[in-house]
Length: 222
Image 1 (cartoon, rainbow, N blue to C red):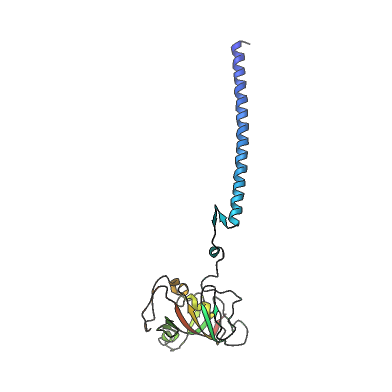
Image 2: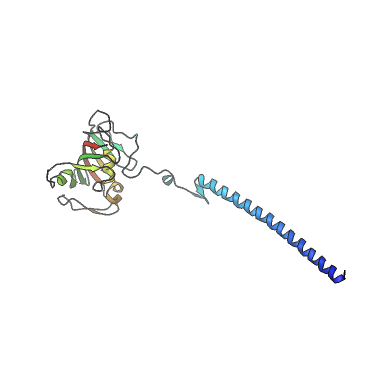
């Protein structure tokens, strides 16, 4: 074999060794990178679960959300006349009459989705303020001239979430009154709305507190 052939073979061998070493070190670097990425991901997940990502702490108000608007905790009750009950969403209900002492789904308190008969008077500014809506105003325009309305809780768009929350604290025959913050008003209080056409005021400003006098007459369908 000539010198040129031997030199060429030696050169080829050196190239192959260099290539093998390069691939080996690349594999080590890739493995190290993968391990590092996995470790970083694990640490990031740990931080997230602890409520902090990249040093930003999640505010408790966001971490502990209350019930949806129009809903109340199952264990929240109105148990004494004159003893005000405040729901997590800010409805302040004061019972004036606790209603029936009977128990059962048709005795109440009703749940979301229940069909009920209800009397109410809605006022602006205070419980002695101008009337902007009532079951009597609505009922007298009906053929049978009733002074109550039938409503499906959490479904009826003609009543605000505040009324739904208050009624869920009432048993059949109960009477009470509720102060409604703006966020429990129509459209969460974000826009003004029209009062009943025969109301003492014609327009309710956005964010206004509403005041309702309520009487639960009947639970038609629990």
